[in-house]
Image (cartoon, one colour):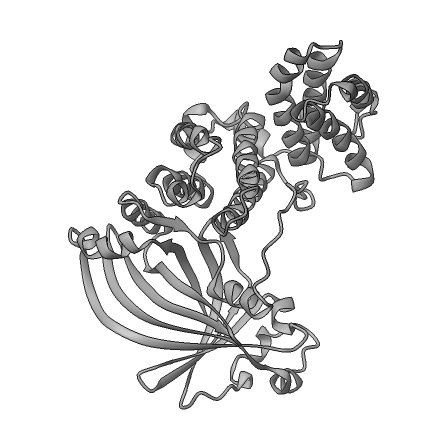
Length: 435
């Protein structure tokens, strides 16, 4: 078993054309282009997908390799996952060659083998550069080709950076250097994920509401912060893909995701000094006005330098725990405390701020002036309410969302009723009656 650590990017034609010049100042060994064919396998009832496994056979230069990728973690476009690779003499699937202990309890490997069948293919040309960067060895692979599933196909044009040896810091630093030339965007979808979607008919993906954060049981404040930022980044990545595929309404979900990042930094701002997030906040400030322009073009913004750098900085901040050097002992003790207790306190503060803003009737202009504050606190409720059942937080959040929509849609006839209804909702969190 090895642990694969890599960053994936979708590359524009201009970025591919400029790649040799971009790499010219680096120390590397070039590997000649190679044609690769990958066949991905699955059962009719998606057994492997349900295990969070991906299985393929790769063919190249009359050689074959069977690979099983297992779960792992994706932060932005950074993948960290175990994988098993088995050389084959022919393109014949034989999953019994994998270690027996990797299969979930109760899995009948022989039965699974009999049910597996080809699901989709990728055919592409891979060109590689093995780069020595700082203290690390990093493989850059340029893949150009197609995904195919039945009669459906989709272009494949990716750049992957894989850490062969060294540190994730160096991997992220090299990605930032490459991204400074423009034309790249982080990809949160693996080849397997894209292929699965194609095999299922390539139906347009649907918008997702911002979820309520469900942190791990007994999570610390620090773990809650990380989970909140990872959730926001995932929401951003997912809806960026929809926006680029032509769903204009997904732009608002991207804006919502950026708002969730901002609100997370605000909620934890009493523990994380502002100087720990200076670069991230500056990049958010750079891209937020651009994405809020109604006529912004998704392609132009999502492949821009600052847009990519913002995601890379956030990814790096999470992966390397970049806040730790700025934390004193007092703050570290608070970060080690209960996230649920922290959430209860912050929920009370959010409610108090909304009560202050909407305690008395407002003019139409007054409602519009308070809309940004209301939107921020609704996002905060999503980040803080997950310790309680949906039956508790859902009516509370929905009441404030109704007021939000009434303001956005300028439904003057409903504003006063919506305001009163939201204020009458009883707090659902511990000690909420005192907030």
